[in-house]
Image 1 (cartoon, rainbow, N blue to C red):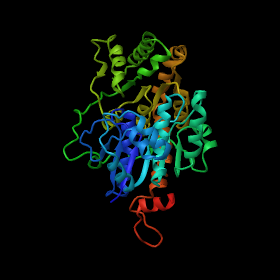
Image 2 (spheres, rainbow, N blue to C red):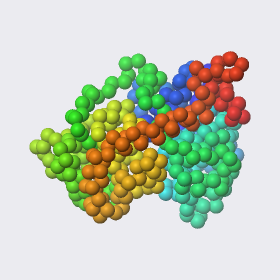
Image 3 (cartoon, rainbow, N blue to C red):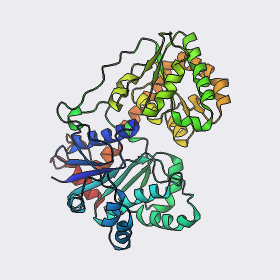
Length: 418
């Protein structure tokens, strides 16, 4: 039957979960009989695919040679659930490796982070498994001098191996292009390119998926989706003051305000905002932790959202919902620019800008919400007219070749990969 191994995924982070579910959903449309393995350390919650916990030590040992020797010196990890013999069998039966890291290859993280990322590619090459790097951010590569020559040599040698590398931002294209050989392309986030609805049968075993009670959002509502990571650019008090100003203005304009976390750690900010409106039923705190499927359906009910989590913006745009975005990285600016929404971008590193202009932008959003939603939907339709999934895996099974035979997308993709 063959296997497809997905690396770089996470199931507890909602954005990473959405990327994992989207890739699996699109794979299963094209070849439903393929076995899907996801390499991550998160618990198995009754998924219809297998969670394999491989670990850095085992992967490095499997590279053999000098790396194999180095791998034996690394302490074992308690979370590993496969042996080397298991992994040998898996790799020999794997038709493709897919990396869905949102952001991993960069000197902004530890040196181990980058090495682990590159080891996945090295392992694919060692076992001659075709590999694809799905849309993600790359760079910069300003590693410490004592490590830089080694890491850059590995990047130069191994980033030529994947048949497809997709950079989410132009900045990533610029960082990575000197080390690739025609396999690098620009592409928006993969979640935007997947179907709007997931097939739960390919994601969960029968009866395993137990969603929270559905949330019915009041008419004329907006949501605030904060991000605790913004606190490193200002104090908690300043951030809560800014969110309070937004909430006050939304209430003044006759709107209801929902406080929604997109990550477990963001609940503290939501509670901090709600503390200033303890008895105001127009300010609704959603305390439950929702998965990416539930969040998608909740966001679909708002007029617009004020968001700082990248994938909450992705989920909103996928529903045609406009966003006032509070971010800091290039990925926010390029995402909003792609959808013609750059005027609604606020840099949280300058809270004075937020304080000064947020009310007027909320007013503009209220007045032009329909037009902004239309622009977003038009761009989304253009994106989905030709997706990376068709490019990498082949067209959907309904398509036929000129000879009239049904296409086998994986066969065609593998031939393309060579």
